[in-house]
Length: 300
Image (cartoon, rainbow, N blue to C red; front, side, top):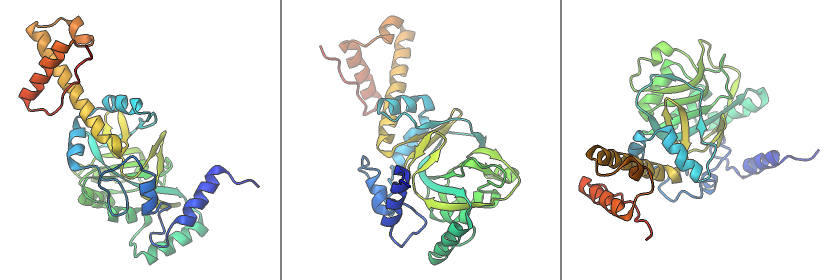
């Protein structure tokens, strides 16, 4: 029988994974290798670490605004709709930590449990990834859309997630104990559904590995952006550009509206490409506001 490309890739990953950290199919070196466009700070395990200041700036970005930048950069599969949101509020923004689950197979799960014991992991497999969370992280769990017996967390594990990350949870699956989760103020949860059952017949195949969430390939270190439209997963190397481009869009709108109210320019002049004189006025206005952003002058 011929080996498929996917099968060969999995064999390569398994054969190159060091003995420490058996759960992950990616080593630190592979996390770095598969995020080659990120040149900033990283966590100890190789996960990209977008700085807090950029995360704060992304709080003002909508799905539509992020979409435009990502599409222009060639990232055409970064948005996933169709979520139930528990504790909706301000936009969810955070660095992604991933967890990959699969339907339980006893012989494979025996190895996972044995390796977890060697690594001194405590509790159920769904709690193992929670132990590594840091402030600003968003835990993103691929539970292959499982609802009944696919409840990643109840109110206890949700409390632990929020205590460690001060941020939210995304599950391509379900949660339980919604009444209790609703008491965790500030803890936003994006899920496919809810169910009173406990998590059963699953196994944890990887922590901080690439996962699939709907139509999106999610990498550890991506920035998750959640709003009323759905979830956008921003590659770390594009996070600052998304923030800066959105800020410029907002400033352009603010100045344009002000010019229209004051009658200095017509709607036709504001809506078309601006003249050199308009751009110079706009840049002087930016300087007066204390913004470091500038619009490039049009070529004469």
